Length: 481
Image (cartoon, rainbow, N blue to C red):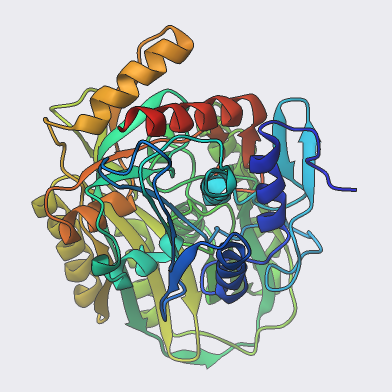
């Protein structure tokens, strides 16, 4: 039996469950892309698929709307793949295990993919519904948005003619986005030298953090497990002599890391001091984060023997980098109250035979400040003997004071729900910025139903909010005559 049967809008949740059954993490979009093409063929709709797995599905205007300007409905097909510790789940081959609890839809032990599967589900429901009134629709469903908007970057804008873009990739009902931050990822690589290890090995773990989206939830001041692990090791080194053997943490640059690990080696006589100091640090951090991130824990346990450890110089460089690399909010906007202007998130930390590697997401609505933070990371890395690489850069999306869509959405929202819509900027990257750079005179808006804790295994979608948001989009389409 299907888990979402009976939820309304029925066809939206039918397609959301279909999508949830198809593995569709970033860089694993072939199958979901094929599904979208099959949908178009089965509904006798023209479509286009490119080499990046982006799909465009075209639907002709309904009767009476032949002379209306075409509209682009847009979302992305990939999802962030995060799971709870110990969850028996393979994102490469398993369909999501959906759960319904009253008004909430979640997934068992994993991210839900509501970001942005609910947009794709809404678009498919609109495309199949012959009773709706609407202009010509160009449905653009992109790939690999979650790892740097890669699908949108590869998209050939000549495949669409619309100057009106409705992006369904936001997470707050009644809040309509009209501009967003730009960003980039910075990879820092610091060379490592090793020595033979003959001491006892222990695992130090920072865990229990909530995590979240590294843009839209960076202002909540939740703990970053990678940065906190650096702090833990720095505090530990003040009182306990240890060698550093390995460390890693995080899975995505656009997700605040929830867990990070370090492997250290100490002489037998220092084991008690190690355990005592970690207990003290745990108490300190639990007190600091009791409101912002109350589940935080710092633990130590015996580990398998590590054959080698960082040289003293390599250990010093890595610990210095971890202690000096900033994280979180850097600046708030002086123009829009409460809006984060500039931030950074150390998102993925790894070590290999030769190097320590950190990947950091940098965001800002001011291009010069984005560049400044990237330059600071480069200076720090180079001072410690390493090199940096800038990748995944994407532009911001500037506010359009003459937006037609903003007025129509505001009117439709008030008519349907008897309250005023809110128009805001967001400190996160949206594909609207890339499309605006490709299409002259593009008028865009971004919206979506209520979604909480995206990019975490606690991701939750509101059923009732989905219905209201879907009805709003259908109402707007009818008004675009």
